Length: 315
Image 1 (cartoon, rainbow, N blue to C red):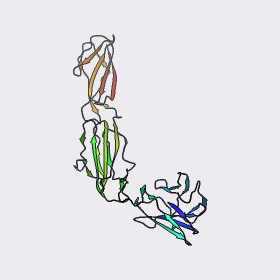
Image 2 (cartoon, rainbow, N blue to C red):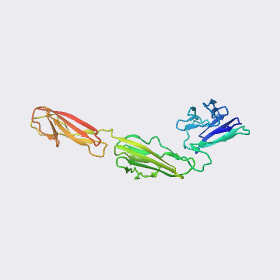
Image 3 (cartoon, rainbow, N blue to C red):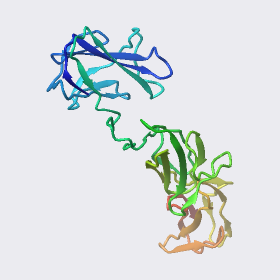
């Protein structure tokens, strides 16, 4: 914004939520560079130049910044006195009012939301997308995630394309969600839930295009790890004493794991003299006295391991 001639007491910039006018605040700017929020305490703007200045508002932090991104003030109250917690629709109406003005007073609105106002009859600014903070990050295999609809808009043009796609990076296959939708160029305004069945990366690709073919592709990544070890559950009785020459059948085990394939299982017997034997089944016959160590070793498809160890005294 620029003011090349300012013969007025002050002017007000008011922002109102598009869907709820009660959610609003007002910035009053005085000729000397002082400013107040909602008629409150008057503060001095740093490095203020009347013919070239701007404000930036963070809806997430509810903070108003000046031209050089110095903090002007935190917005804590609406004009009606209610607590201000940000514009809930993420879209606002803007108005400017000049008070006690005499000739000449000249305002120039240079740009709003990065869109420059001029005599050039074309749209130079692409749409903007704001992704939900819950999309992206690290997950475990088997987690169910939801891709939430983002906020998106264009300053001058209408939106003609708004889609989202989700692929598993290793296979380049599009994901099918819980409702049977293949997530390939689907409506960006939906929420889509699906299970993460493989370790690696899932790519979430957003695309918004305005009517002048200005497009914005944006990508978020879901990183999937297997942080869950398989567990071993002994089924049946495990005898801790035996005789030389006795035919021993070890108990079965149940393996619980979050993977898609059955984990590898190895049963190893360590004899009293230190020799090791890998059992093809659960049977073996001790040939000498002493302590035998039985180890059940389990490894899942993502190399997460567990083991169960038991000793048998043979006499």
